[in-house]
Every structure is written in structure tokens, then in C-alpha cells.
Image (cartoon, rainbow, N blue to C red):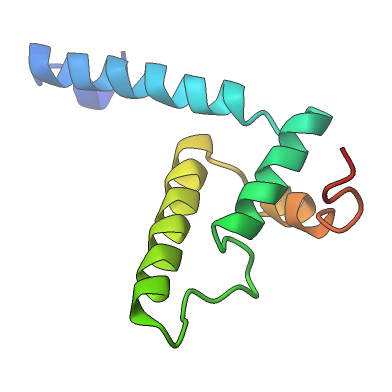
Length: 102
């Protein structure tokens, strides 16, 4: 148990344990060390507008709202997996090599 958690009570301990468990599932699911997992993340980056050059703006406000929602999903995945900037850059840089080749 981390030092900052001591003395905070049972509720904080449950939240901490749930978060640790939750993050472990994301890291297991999106383990970028494996080939197919990298391809899935690259595809999600494209679909969710998670690449640095992507935009979530569209002339149709409804489509903009959909794109914003997709981007929020990408941000959620990135927060849970804690990818290092270099890992994310490497992942996104390889997107053209094997996009839709499976």
C-alpha cells in the first residue's frame, strides 16, 4: 500500500484496489509489445482521431459530436494504459506499414 493511502480509510483502499485492477486489465488488453495489439491500437487511433494530425471538427455539428466522442474513447484508453510518449510515437509511426493487412 502506498504511503499516501495510509490512514485514509476503507473507502480509499477499495478505490485504490479497483483502480489498480482496472488499469492492469487495460495494460494487458493493450500490450503494445505484441504485434496484433499494436495493430488494434493503430486502428483505434485512426478511428478515434487519436493521431496528432487528426481533427475532430466537421461542418456538420452532429458529426463533430460523434468525432469528439470517439476521441474521448482514445483519451480514456491512453490514460489507462499509461503509454510513454516514445511508445505512443512508435506505435503511431508504424500505422501505414500494416494497416488493414490482416
